[in-house]
Amino acid sequence: MQISRRPFTATLALTAVTALALGTAATAAAAPGVPPSMVDADPSIAEPASDPFYTPPAEIPDASGTLIRSQFAPQLLSAFEAEDAPGRADKILYTSTTQDGVTVATSGVVIEPAGKWTGAGETPTIVFAPGTRGSGDACAPSRAGAQFAGIDTSSWNANLNYEYPFYAAASALGYRVIVADLIGLGTPGQHTYVNHTEEGHAMLDAARAGLAFAGASADAPIAFFGYSQGGGAAAGAAEHAATYAPELNIKGTFAGAPPASLDAVAGAIDNHMISGVLGYALNGALARHPELASLEDEYFNEEGKRYLASTADECIGNSVAHWAFRDTRTLTKDGRSFTELIQADQRLRDVLLDTNYQLGSRALNAPMLMVNGRYDDTIPWGQARDTAELYCSLGGTVQFATDETPEVLPRSVINHAVPMITQVGSGFQYLNDRFNDVPATSNCGSF
Image (cartoon, rainbow, N blue to C red; front, side, top):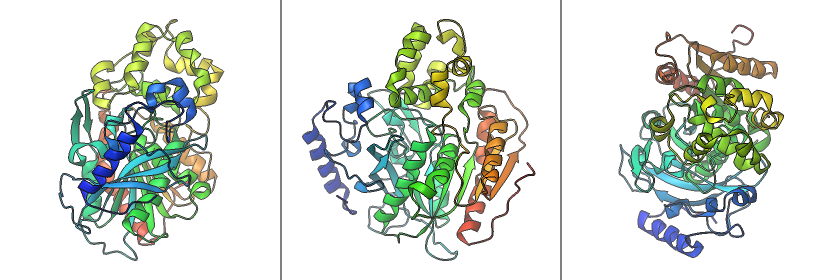
């Protein structure tokens, strides 16, 4: 059932009634929108999210990209609740699909243009994928207070929506903005961090549901934008678009510093300020592959098990506080690093290096700008370049750009974060040209 825009109080009442109807603790037999394998592995996953808006109804539509409900969402730069106010924001709950074809509920936010679109044709939409926020529900961008920042007092997870200025800028430039929280980030279920199939599905379905919610035409122009985890999600959406959502009118993609190959990224993240993110990836993989549950006892010592439990429900700031610069060799029984375990164990390789996690095996259906810092201390430049070359080999129109920010304090995130800021303007300009039907150039074969 689709629910159109309505006053905040009415929608909140509806979601509260839904939450009460579901009860405070669901069972494996009553876990709407949660894959059965995840409930079997951890029955607590079926419990409703703390905010009833994010708790799916007892039955959700089968069709991907279907709007389930919406709710007015005050944001930092606009508190307007009026129907068509400039910059108005609304949270949406919509359907998407896991890598196994299970329909789940996913959340996001739609921000109407605060400025007027002066380019060609209908108002365009940029679908943003968030960079790394964490793995807990409290970390979802749409859950941040005023869409910017907040603290969940039940877990003391801090949610800083550090890319909010990008969303506000895009809205001011006349673009409609849709932000996808991604599967399991905000809604029941473990977040499947850097699973590019599921992230791509969430992005494509956010476009479907967001356009329908906004009353835009079915063929309204859209583009994808993301950096870091978001860059991988944007590229995942671009890869899957042709087969998963061929009806969408996709004009282009900006994919900044995408984590395209987990074995390369794992080595860079070890002993790093954000080494906790490896736990996000492992917890997500274990949720989708319960047959790997025995690996926890096989490989991890007690500290390693505490690491997995801690990172399963943390935001990035909390993970930095708990696990910064952790050497993963201290988390395993035999002193091997996570990278060495991935390289040695075929069961792990089959999951973490398959096409759900590895980018570059599917052709793009629209031009792409991919950017990575040469001295990126978090997402290695080489694996991004190799992915761009794979897209080129599949006939893609790809522009690969290298940010040459000099190396500063390795493993501190600085050389990863600076290009996110310096290249955002290039990303907007690239997508703006695509929306105005400027022919895209390619530098395939010369990077």
